Length: 355
Image (cartoon, rainbow, N blue to C red):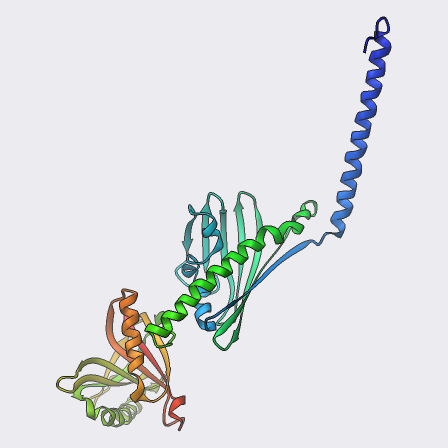
């Protein structure tokens, strides 16, 4: 624009135009800010993302993958996204257990187990530390349907008033992570279920801690064919001797199995009863303190003469997981012929002590 001798007029005109443009921009920003603030009143203050998957595995198999954070390593979606993810987990699997991770893409966070109900429910709280600070609550619920399990994974959280728009994006951002995690959980659970059926005869073997107890016992090497008679005679004898010494019964009858010699038909076994007291036993009865230690356990239902598969399953598990068996084998007779006539309802808890 050639203003010629009217440069002052042109300059004033340009300033007026610029001021009008700035005013329009300011008004636009003010209106948009006002509209956003107004919209924030109508955007929910919290978000909730939910995904569901049907897994072809029994509920206890799926729960085992969830209950221990060390098992999450095989199916958590954040590790799948971030190969550089470093994880530290607490040694136990109960309320208060934690899982800390740090990665290039996954950021840094700490997950804490806030509640756990066997074969039903797990809840957690995540404190996200990097790249930004915020908190999330999660719930994973299980519904048992024969040999299938319906898994529902929910994550919930909230954002400050001025960031409520993020609640509208949560489903798109978090949903794929939950979907990926459920797909991986389905894969590892169904694989574990297949292994249980093929190698462990369908028995659910748990790695746990044997709590330890004091027992009164009678230990002998006997002919395998005389074993039933040995236990039948020993329990009343231990019971009577414990009463004579002021002991109290403290649990179900037990059998301890040390050595089997099938060639000669001989076994070294002990009949035992958990007891409480500070005295000593006599009359062929001895005392022993079974210490708290690592163990495998199976809850078996059925007659005592049909337990071959229980021991084969435990032996296979020890071999596959590369555990070292310590012995003795412990059988707890939770429910037996004295309480239940139907042998299919007899409950024997079998413990393998391991290092």
